[in-house]
Amino acid sequence: MRNLLLRLMYDGASFHGWQVQPNGITVQEALQDAVEQILGVRENVTGCSRTDAGVHANDFCCNIRTENPIDCYRFQGALNAVLPDSICVKSVEEVDCDFHARYDCVTKQYVYRVWNASYKNPFLTSYAWHYKNKLDEVFLNEQAQAFVGKHDFKGFCSTGSTVEDTVRNVKSFSVSRNGEEVTFTVEADGFLYNMVRIMVGTLIEISENKIEKDKLNDIIDSKDRKLAGRTAPPQGLYLNRVNYGRYQCAGE
Image (cartoon, rainbow, N blue to C red):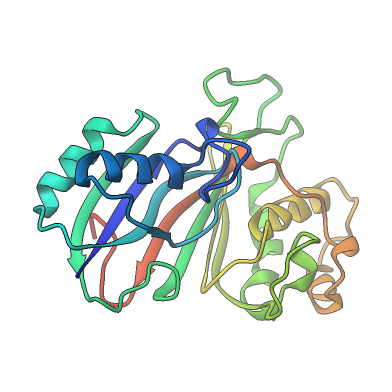
């Protein structure tokens, strides 16, 4: 049995998230369809994360176990030939049999894009949150440092999640500006349901004076979702990089 690690990029605007579900086309379903078309078997595909509808990925990892001897480079090319244009396979490599795309992940990095201008950008409607009020990225970067470290982020998880362990270690969080675009970048050993979008929404509400500045530590310690800010919309969120101890990101 071979174990293949695939790295993908995809436009989440075309899908109802990663995981197969009955009410819409998902990335996992599209990939399984393509694998079945090429290998003649509907192999199981294990993803590194469960991105929501409208969320994008610059680097999404999954693994497939198969008996098929197909060459990795040929498999990559064949997949890209049959997958929709909204999904690209960046690489395919054979990995250890015990490798698991989700459980072997060391850290993930997410990027959240905000188009921060009084006017909309028609090219970013599905790819960034249009927020009109001027953001002070230096101030928000300072506030965001409260997220860094090992904390219980229960208050930054959407209700309905069944996860019991809500402690996560945030390695870094930065807020930067490039012209009219403000980017929120966060890396951690794991994320809760809607955690990044709630973090961004909370920082936005600090900028709006709806949440008092320098109070993020208190909000984190409270573990109370009601004290954190709103959930930012999905279209600005990108899974940007997935790190494994033994397997470097494509291009590194």
